[in-house]
Image (cartoon, rainbow, N blue to C red; front, side):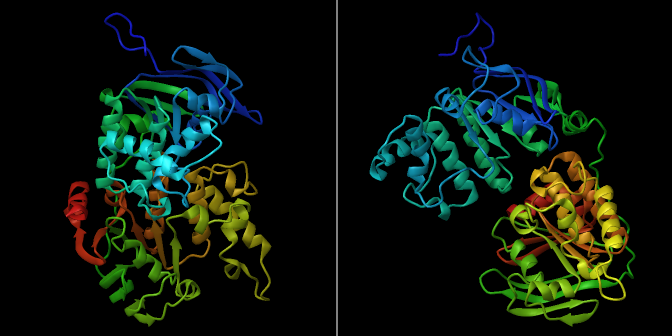
Length: 504
């Protein structure tokens, strides 16, 4: 049982003291100290590359610090290993949940506890009672017999939480837990978080979504360049203050959209586009220099519309016109030749060659744009394009030859964007352009999109991040059950209105 000072706060369930960690002579963490109280949500915030992931790995035993110590219930360790961490009640839920898709919900819930206790035999039937007990305790509705691969993202998240708690977790670290959740599912998750707090579980909540940070956390610890720059009660902070501590500079998150010329050309026009089982009767236009938002719940059809325009899943009815001329888009190559680019939702598996260099990725899609009059590759032009985009998009890496797999999420997103900008498409679609990136990178990416629109590119942003849509979009389409049900413009492009229309 956690000791408590007389009439004072409870003793920390976890402390990290003066943690130092370097990689190749570069400091990832410098003298970082934190404490977590039982029943508390402590948000760990910071830009990509600030040291958050390294600190989580040290706490969970995946990395060893160069110096410092981890203290759990008064027991000090110079380093953890994963088994000791689990036995000490420390559990991490990563962004990918680390579940076994071919096993049932019940089997996934009990498996970590079984491994930690070194059981040699596994019984699927024996897994069910322990799994049922924790599901009942949290008041959840999960099909314990369903294979995990059949679950929604939200139910996978809940399965991972149950797995942690069946192992008697007293410290639960949640890494970007709301990235793929809808607004309604986030609210549902926060109800579970409050139940965990009531049980005395201490939670470290890692998130780039500052409105959620302020809603769920009691305290906020902010890292910048490997140092803990501030730890404060959440009630004393707002989004602007957190952003300032994270980046060291003031960020402007207000709405910035250019004034479109009413006579500007229509570059894209959809007329009654449809795809069986996904969406139907979708009609809208996009003008030169316009940033158009598309939003809706997961499964609304918003992503399928974009994938059809890019030829990945061709539409089966309706027409597409580019610059007033009807085009036939039945493949990705058709879309590219028509001047359409697409930054996908899953940029790491669909948008990048992870083992290739930044330079190779930037130029991969545009060799034809960098040829001489004789048809040979213009190496000078290639080098110039790579360096210009690397510099302009402020990719944080030693040089253009650095492998993409070494980059943070925000920098990987910049490389995908650079790859398409090298082609100079007429129309660029981006699905979740700032998912998983920090607030500084988010502001810079949106600024890049505004600059491209100002040069005449038509841009479509598919997102469920209402503040992001408000910050950069001229108009916002709301998609529900495969149809465009609202077109918001002017003063109606507002966070509360967008959320209300999406949830209706």
